[in-house]
Each structure stands twice: as C-alpha cells, then as structure tokens.
Length: 620
Image 1 (cartoon, helix red, strand yellow):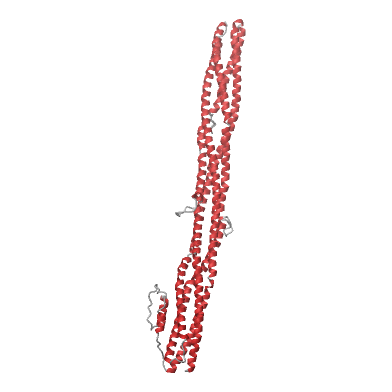
Image 2 (cartoon, one colour):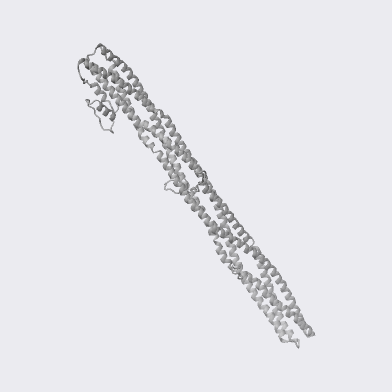
C-alpha cells in the first residue's frame, strides 16, 4: 500500500504541474483567439467597404455604357456613352435634315437653270430678247439705207426725209451700242451662270454623297456600336457577378466570427475546471488518507480529466468550425479574387483595344468603338466644311448677278426711250414722204411698219425683261436666303458635332479612369484579404496547442485509471462509485449547451440542466 500511495502522490504532483502548464497554454490560446478574432473584426468593416466600393465601381462602369435601373447614379447622364452617342447621332441627322433643303433649293431654281432635258430656263430668255431686237434693228437699218437712196433721188423734195433717214441711222447705231453693252453683260452673266451651275452641281454631288453613303455608313456604325455597348455591359455584369460570388463568404465569416465569445467562455470554463482540480489535489496527502478517500479522489480526477479532454476536443472543433473555417474562407477568397484581378487586367486591356487572348482584337473593344467614330467624324466635318465653303462662295458671288441684271435693265430702259423717239420719227417720216412725188407708197408703209415693230418689240421686251428680272431675282433671293440658313445650320451642326466629339473623348477618358478605379478597388480588396489571411494563417498553431493539452490530460487519465485498478484489486472490489458533490459543483458552472451536453454524456450519474441548443447560461 505504501508503494501505491507514493505512486499516487507522484501522479498528483506531476498532474498539478501539468495543470498549471495547461492553464498557461489555455490562457495563451485565449490571447491568440482574441488577437485573431480581433483582427478579423477590425478588418471586416474595411473589407466590406472595399467590397461595396468594388461593386459600385463596376456598376458605375456599367452605367457609362447603358442605362440601368439604378435609382441614383454618380454619372452625369451627359457622359453616358449611349447618351453621348444618341446626341451625336441626332446632330448628324440634323445635318442630313439641313441638306434636305437641297430639294427646296432645286424647286426654287427650276426656272433659273436648265433641267435634265436641256429645256430652256427663264434665264436663257434674256438672250432670246436680244436676238429678237437685233432682227428688228437690222430691218430698220436696211430701210434707213434705202430711205437715204430714195431721198437722194427726190432731190430738194427729199431733203427733209433725208434728215429723218439719218436720224434713224443714228438712233439705230445708238441702239446697237446698247445691244453690245447688253451682250457684254449677258456674257458676264453667262460666265457667272456657268460657275453658279457648276457650284450647284458640285454641291449637289457632295450633298448626295453625304445623304446616301455617309448616312448608311453612320447608320451601320451606330448600330454596331449600340450592339457593342450592350455586349460590353453584359461582360461587366458577368464580371460583377463573379466578384459578388467570390466575396459571398465574407457574410459567412461575419456570422462565424460571432462564435468568439462562446469559444472564450468555454476556454475560461476549462481553465476554471483545471484551477478547481488543482485546488482539489494540491493539499491532498495520500499517506494519511484512507483507501475510500483515495478511490473517491481517483474517480474525481479521472472523470475531470476525461471531461476536460472532451471539452478541449469540443473547443478545437469550435475553432475548426469558426476560426479555421474563416481562414479557409479567406484563403479561397484570396485565390478567387486573384483570378478576378487577372480577369480585370485582361478586361482593361480588352477595353483599351489590346489582345483578347486569342491573338486577335475584338470589334467591341472600347478603343475600336471610339476609333471608328473618331475616323468618321473628321471625314463628315470635312465634307460639311466643303459644303459650307460652296454656299459661302455662292452667297458672296451674288453681286455679279445683281449688278449685271441691273445694267441690262438700264439698257432696256434706254432702248425704250429711243423707241419713243422712233414714234415721233414715224410721224415726221409720213409727212415728208408725201412731199416726195413718184415714191412708192409701199416703201413708206414698210418704214412705218418696221418702226412700229421696233416700238412694239421694245415695249414687249421691256415688260418681258422686267417680269423676267423680277422672277429671277425673287427666286435667286430665296435661294440666297435658304443658302444662308443652310450655311448657318451646317456651321452650327459642325460645331455641335465637334463638341460631341470632344465630349466623346472626355467620356472615353472618364471610362478609362473608371476602369482604373475598378482595378484599384479589386487590387485593394485582394491586398486587404491577403493581409488578413497571412496574419491569421498562424491560427493552426492553436490546433497543436490544444492537442498537446489533450495528450497530457489523457496521459494522466490513464495513470489515474491504472492506479484506481490497483487499489480496487488490493481491496477486492470490481468497481467504485465515487461521491461527486464537488464534480457536481463544477458542472453547474458550465455556461454553454455543448459543455453541459458533453458533461451529461460523460458523467451519467450527475444531474445537469442541459438547456436548449440555442440558449446559453449566464457567465460565472
């Protein structure tokens, strides 16, 4: 018996030391879990903020490409690509609408220029008037020459008629000079007319080219671009979906982190059990104790050690289900986000027009979208500037038309004055002609008829020219007014398109900045998670510490059980039921459902209020 007593005393001494060491180890575990959980708790808000920021940056980027249902967007709608493109397309169509005034111009100038069937236009009637007057004038000149011959034959009786004949010649020569002046003005107008119609034809060609070819080209460009914008938006939505999916564990981590208090309580309770056990054995003197007392103490020690071992296992399981799982979640998130970061870099290159990974460049590349427009807009504005220059030339050249039309009118007015003089000469010629005996009456009638024809033609041509001039000037004035209006509209449209191009380039810069901001957000999120992951990577050392505690508890439990068997053999007993009052007191201090349930399963003869799985008892 003395030998067994000494063995028991040695076990108690060693156990006391081991319990002290285990308590220190448990306190160290508490400190480490506090550090780990504290780190997670402190970083979670920042991580959540980074996640929200990354999602918002992606949404912001999506909003640049298409309209979304977001109630509040940080993007000015004036800088949404679809808005900018729609405005640009609208301005370009306004240019086409301005060019449609070409039909109105053609309608106004129908009587001003020759049509496709080469029918004479009113403008060409000016030349016909000159030809008609020249025919009458030629007849008068012939008659005046004959009149001079007749008057010479009449001698003195023909002297008065000779004066009249000379006057007819003088007036005819005067009229001839005016005809020549009119012809010079007509030639000037013809030259102006050729330039005018040439400019109109070139203008029509340019406008037709823009209205047909450019209209179709811009239609195709905008259709492709709008499809591309939707494709890009869908890509970004998928990208955002991957981000959201990769960070979903963060919400599980938030819940798992709430287990910290329970784990701390359980560790503190286990420390309390070990402290109580220390108290129970430190003053126990085996040599002076009876066998019954020794066996009760051995039963207490084995059951406490077994229970402590089970509780430590439970704590390790809780750590695995909480802290270790958190670390695994962070590791997985870090891996997933690194892949997303690589995808984001590829996406950035893709937007910038870089390789899509297959050695080719996709047509929906952001850079290519802009490039197609940037290549198209200068071509269009160059054509528009050409049209504007043509209209400017047509407008500035109007002085030639008006000056020569007025000069011709002045000459026709002078010719009308001469026609009045011919009216007087006709009367005088009739009187003088009657004095000339032997002269044929038909000759006198021919002179009267020719003068009458000239006077009538002069009146008709004067009125015809006035009507023609009024009509041509009205049409030409309307043409000038429309030309000025079209020129101003084209100028405004060109400026508006230039402004839209500038806004388009600004939008491009904003999108690039948004892409960079998104990439920075992803980098920041990855960096934050990797930092946390690295810092809590040492949490697995807790597993080693816990297992060391379990091993030491199991070692002393086995020694206590063996010694218990030795005592039972010596007293001839098969088993021993100890008095568990002190053990009952320890169990009553348990605060978690898992602790109480474990105690009930391990020590069946104790009355333990297990409670509900969701409920926790008050901390002691």
